[in-house]
Image (tube, rainbow, N blue to C red; front, side):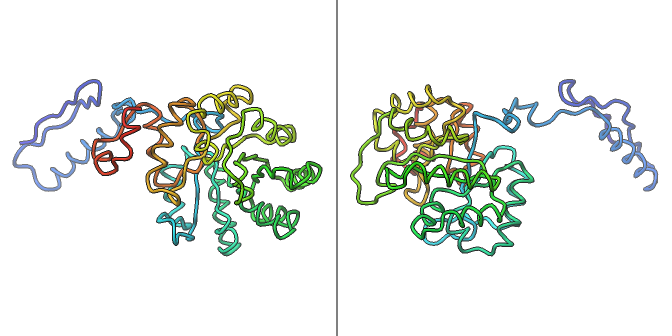
Length: 328
């Protein structure tokens, strides 16, 4: 004999269930089960989020707690293991789309993947309020070929809504940069400025940490022209070393938290440095700081870290080099 079921009041309280007496015919038993199921469906229930008091991302558009993702498409070899085709992307965005604000479509993907396919990918991101952008590598390639104007127009034709520029250390006159910024705006794109150490522009340059004033001064023409964010390249943060908290903290204070984002080291350069970067940035710049260069597999991991959760000891046993940030 089935018993009447009554769950605890703070979860689901289903009254009026009919017991199923023994001896009922098959059709009669099925009818009682169906009635009970309908009552359960109609009963007030609570979600897993409510039961466990889970933190959800704040609605978009947001100016803090932003996540900027890196999408390599099928351009995986020799560095990546995270392909992102259209079918994977549709499923991924259904799960993680609310957590992502911007996505960097890698330049090699823009150069090597079919244009119609790229247009569909860009449109799919936009359907989930994720804005795709052309990174500075696209600008650098266009500059070296002398085709920046045409490249801006071609990127806009693909559907990109944002373009990233970088500091050129005097090689490009400000008047020319202004013309290119205007061209991007006229093509319907918003602007990002990324600050790199000099070796990001000239590979032969020696490492030299920038002062807060230099970073701000380099960003000002772009901000005055409408750039909405200043990205701090991970190499600048590495070069700053112990001074990063003070120097980049001053940049945050002057420009505003909503206009600065910090780049995580890619898995292309080191397998687990991204985790150390995350923990260091959250400690130095605040749990709500904006983060860029997040790989798709890392997206669901970031928000729990922001809210104080920490991984199990297995991570540190497997990667002893992470013990330096274990207690952050």
